[in-house]
Image (cartoon, rainbow, N blue to C red):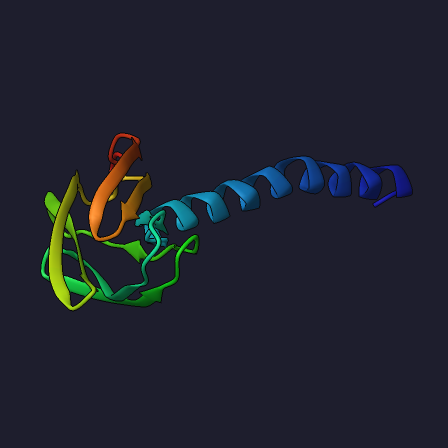
Length: 133
């Protein structure tokens, strides 16, 4: 092979190979990465939110205590359409707050503001469930 033929082969490999590898990596990421739904819990009140737990589809994610003005951001992974619950204790009283529904393979976040144990504001930014999953 001449030098120009070798250069042509390398350019062809570069022009075809790099996009092919990038496409394969994106497809693998899409099908094997579990996106989940981000839950942003912000304490807008004056008291500590104690023993905060996010529950979806029977799975519980322990968040711990959230100080006034602080935020916690757990991610949940629903297996079926389910309601996201937030359990917490404020001033010795146990609360279970119903927030919003989440579906499997849904992408987005659920913003929850809690003031003194009560749901203050709910911001739902969910996109459609990812297709082909």
